[in-house]
Image (cartoon, rainbow, N blue to C red; front, side):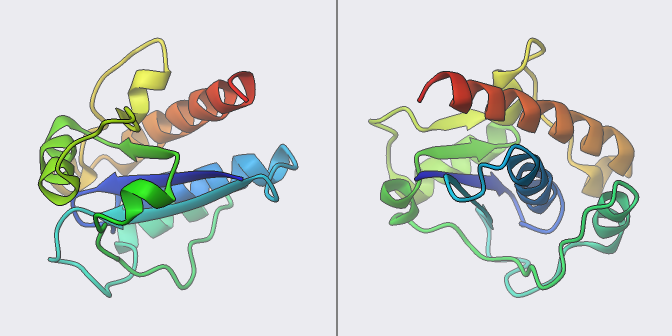
Length: 152
């Protein structure tokens, strides 16, 4: 089974959006028995909190629910548990390295690096643009799923 962990700073906006977008795509591709998906934070600030309401609303506008999801923090053990550790921006990489130490298996990549337009996914906590964030995440998840299917 292929295992993917999406990671952002607080696990209340971008990484849970990516988790649930990818779960939908994987379900539609009938790969849900082959691909496991989760998300986590690099910080402890939001641990136990639900997905941020504007992020929930954006997901719902696309027919995606994230009911029951609460923020959790990434641990060093997650490095061995997951095949792909997918981050939203460069700050996430620095914070993950504080948690895992190093990336000897080259598992840590930005989501948008799987697309033809590599860049950070802007944090809607600061931009307020959840629609743009969703658009990037949807594009990135589609590209990541294609990458995984082509590299089995």
